[in-house]
Length: 119
Image 1 (cartoon, rainbow, N blue to C red):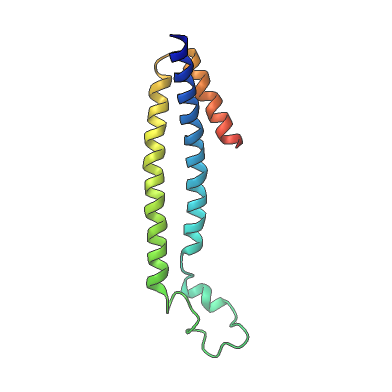
Image 2: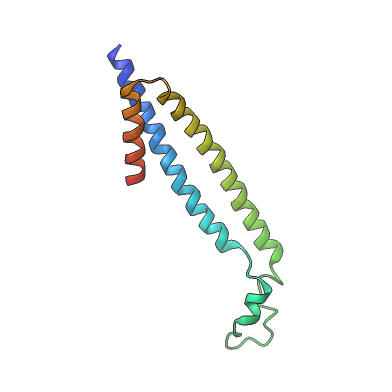
C-alpha cells in the first residue's frame, strides 16, 4: 500500500508542476497576443514615416493587413482560452487531492508547485 501512496504523491507533484508550467505558458501566450494586436491609428499618427516610404498608409498593418492581424490575434485568444480551461481543471484536481486531508499529498502539492515555479 506504500507504493500506492508514493505513486499518488508523485502524480499530485507532477500535476502541480504542470499547473505552474501552464501558468507560465499562458503568460507567454498573452505577451505574444498583445504583440500581435494592430497599432491604433493614433499611435501611427505619432510615429514618423520610415526612410523611403512614399505613402505611410501602404505600410500600415492596421489599414492594409487588419484582417490578417485580427485573425492572428483570434488564434492567440483561442489558445489562451484552452490554456485557461486546462489550468482550471488541473487546479481543481490538485485541490481535490489536497482536500483528502492527507499530509503527504499536501506536501506533494506544495513541492510540485514550488518545483514548477522554480523551473
